[in-house]
Length: 470
Image 1: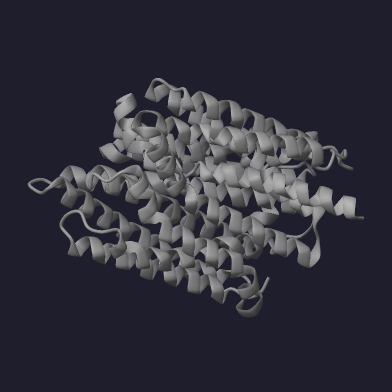
Image 2 (image 1 turned 90 degrees about the horizontal axis):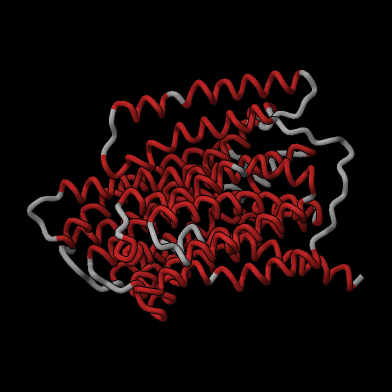
């Protein structure tokens, strides 16, 4: 019995490490962007692709990866994805041009998208009942901590290795963590059990979803900081027919008794769809916070990478504390906890915006420490419970597909948020004439904060569509 428990614990450690490293890479690179710009002579468009390309590639393959895990074994796909992630981390660290770095980051995102859906699936295979909710709470905490601690970790590495090699260390730091993850996965993850029903791949559905997402997001990412052209709006609008066609195809396949990539039953589940939209919108606001704060603090105010990481640390601390206790709170007050979390994030970011408005140039990071701590507490109360709330609305064999769709929403939200908020940020900087660089960055961050707050208000409304209790 003890041996079985030990194996389950080590298997859990393996998948939690995978979740940690995949989401750490969504924010750890932010503080390295100024040094990457200098070293590789990267443009603002390339800088956005280094961040958003990872998130976009991550999101595109999630649903397909869940099916691959069902067919070929979660352990096999998890190990393959982790190994590919390791290779791309090394190639990113050795990148000599902005193009080669973007390619490494996109493939690294694909690798993360391959192994990440196996995490939820393995958890649901190994745990049930109240234990399942507890483990999802731990996963939510890992997600919050990994995303929030990224800027500090990146800052420490750049301070330790210097501006020339520090940004490379941001990618190389993955190597020892991924090696431990790989060894534990090979030794302790449950072996593949052939499914009772043969898993078929919905190739037209995969192609349709990929094409629809690319049509929607490529113009935003590639043109966001340079202003949109009429053709960009046309490309984005052309994604709508493909999404509708994908829905029609899914309904048709389901009626024939086949296995569509996206289950129509999930799309009819209003609480699940609301939770998925809530996750998309929240991650659009949440991930972009670190992007614009890091660039402002370093490029605008001329501060070091470690200073940038330390400036955002209060957010990470608040997120860790709140996420660690969120499962206990949610059992007492239900979805009201999400409203409290969103309200705290709005209050915290509003206060940050006021601080930047009151100061024309460089100021102490202590001025934004308390507002970021409040926002971090709110974030920790959102991310950890949101997974349980949304997936608890789905039962039976559709849980795997639901997990893939839910995670896809998070990754697409991250990509879209950085693109949109980055667009507002860089265009505001470009329009700021006759003012100091520090003031221009302050104005850009302020305007971007307003966008984030608007997104969070949408989140506040969407919470009402979730069930009151898990």
